[in-house]
Image 1: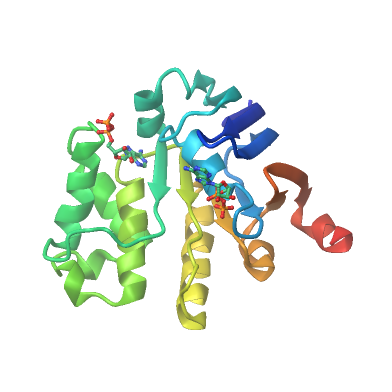
Image 2: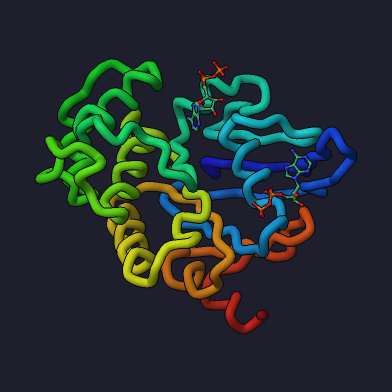
Length: 224
Ligand code: ADP
Ligand code: ADP
C-alpha cells in the first residue's frame, strides 16, 4: 500500500480563493517525489495539509492508512517537516537541538537514533557546536536532523534550496541522495526543474491548484 494516499483534495481559503482544486496522488515507500510548480501553484498548501498543520476543505489524506484530517497529532508523529526558514535557537548545541526535537514530538530519548541521524548528515563531529558556529549549509542539515529526530515515515522538504547559492544547492542535493540510500521516503517542493530532475524518482507538476501530471523522471523530460 502507498505510504501516502491523497484523494480529491480541495482547499478554499476564507477569502474564497481556491488554492487546491481536487488533487489525487499516491506516494510509495522509499521514493523521492518532487512537486514542481511556480510560486502560488499550491505546493505549500498541499504540504501543510498532508503534514496535519492545515485543514482541507474536502477530500481525504491517508498517511500509512490513517486519516490525517481526523487525527493530526498522530500524523505529526509520522511525518517530519523541514521548513523553509531557519528558526532554531542559535545558542543551543546541535546535539541538544536534535534530541530536544525528538522530545517535543513526544518520543522517549533514543541517543542511538540521534547519533545515526547526525552521522548520516555528516553532523557528528559538530554535535557539541552551537548553531551559530555552523555554516549556512550545516544549519540546513540540522533542520533536516530535527525533522528526522522522531523517526518519521515520510520527510517533507519545503523548497529546500529556495534562495540559496549554487554550492549550497549542490550540498542539499547530496544530502537528499544520502537519505535516499538510507531508505527515507521524501516529498519535496521546488520551482527548479533541474532540481526535480536531479534528485527525484517521480515528479508531479502542480499549477493553479491542480496536479497536471505525475511522471517518472525519465518520461517527464519528453513531455515538457
Ligand atoms: P506555493 O507554495 O506553490 O507558492 P501556496 O500554497 O503558498 O503556493 O499558495 C497557493 C495560492 O493560495 C497562492 O495564490 C496564495 O496567494 C494563496 N494563499 C495562500 N495562503 C492563503 C490564505 N491564507 N488566504 C488566501 N489565499 C492564500
Ligand atoms: P498545538 O498548536 O495544537 O498545540 P502542537 O503543539 O502539536 O499543536 O504544534 C505546535 C506547532 O508546531 C504547530 O502549529 C505546527 O506548526 C508545528 N508542528 C508540530 N508538529 C509538527 C510536525 N510534525 N511537523 C511540522 N510542524 C509541526
